[in-house]
Image (cartoon, rainbow, N blue to C red; front, side, top):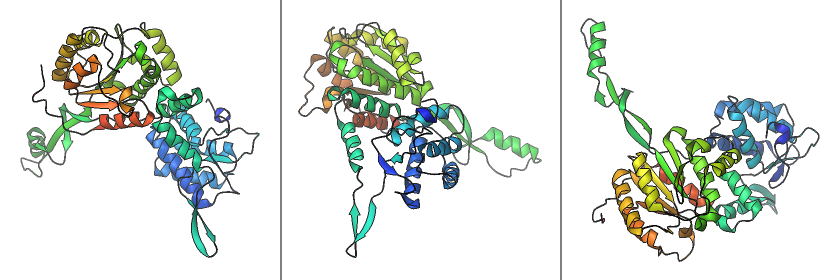
Amino acid sequence: MKDGRDAGSAGGGREAGSAGMTAGELVTVMTGFARTLRAAGVPADHERTQNMMRALSHLDAARPGDVYWAGRLTLCASADDLPRYDRVFHAYFGGLRAGRARPAAVVVTRHTALLSRESGGVRQERPALSAGASATEVLRHRDVARMTAAELAEAHRLLALLRAPRERRESRLFRSSRRGRLDARRTIREALRRGGETARLRYRTHRTRPRRVVLLVDVSGSMTPYADTLLRLAHALVRSEPRATEAFSAGTRLTRLTAELRHRDPGTAMDAVSRAVPDWSGGTRLGEELRRLLALGDARGATVVIASDGWERGDVSLLAAEMARLSRTAHRVVWVNPHKGQPGYQPLTAGMRAALPYVDDFVAGHSLAAFEELAGLLAGPYARRPRDGRPG
């Protein structure tokens, strides 16, 4: 979407405007919109949100174009925010078109129930399009392999909005602090400026930085229903922390995809990935790919996420040996298996049985809700599980 006229077509939300929404309800909806923008990385703080509401007070909230431009001109701080604003506007307002010629009602999803009085009492009415929110919740938990093309497109659009902050780790560098370790050098330097009198003690503490995440996505034939969506998850992770994320595809060879996934637009990134990966829908030799990954040194001290169903066509003993090395090298090992979300799943494949003793977290990877849980896991903090008694 390049401007307000490309914001999408109306549908999927609840009608609201000067005739169908009170001032309080409008504030609730637009405040929720601002919160969604902040989650997507747009600095829509309280002051900017107030400016947007003041702008809307002079405009017609029933006109999509007025709502679009009031938010765009007040909530965005730079040109980099505009693509994010357009994507969030399209997703939040259910495909609203901000065209000039159509005075259609603004389509929104209300986050509070309406109250109306009947027969002297107060009863709660469910909005007519609360089913839209229910449909989104159903979509979040649906297996991506069973989605229709339209559902998959919507899931990919929501996945592009995923924010994935990282667990923080201490750096070797220090910063000034009100408490922590005594900074003798700064304390003495300040005392010398005051004629040798120590007026106050200075302290320092370690800087923190996001812990690196290395993501390995299996693109073999058995992973075909999930590989594209998992690579879109990789795109969201790379975009969230470009300097702290490395992404690879694994099949018959290991391919680094970090540069391709740094494209801002998900479609452009996926096109670049499709050209870069030479072994789509082939076999799986995870043991050999892990050996190559460990030789690169990227896994040292990182959280390593392996997205695979565990169908190993190579030497299973090699996979077990390399997983043992990875367990000793990485900060944490997370295995994402799309089939784990299915009722009654048991890790019976030889590859999974060989890998599981060295895995810290074994999680599902079949739905938007599972991906959100994975993002929360990467955010930490959490304690490493003891490795006592593991083989290897």
